[in-house]
Amino acid sequence: MSLHTTAQSLVSLAADGHGGEHESINPYLTGGGALFVLLLLLWITTRFNRDR
Image (cartoon, rainbow, N blue to C red):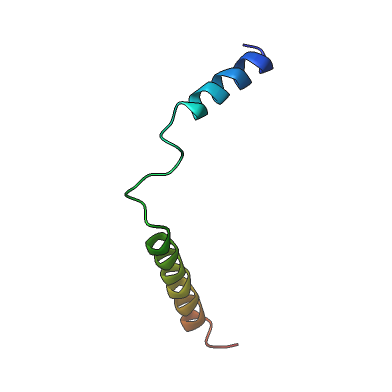
């Protein structure tokens, strides 16, 4: 398959979607969850590095 044919297939696949956004995904909930997980990992890391 050539690069042009592959690119054309991907463009048509992307244009066929529902606008690119899912209604069930809340960006604030996703960002808040990611922030919570990163802060939890930071807290765990600092608990294991008490000698510094």
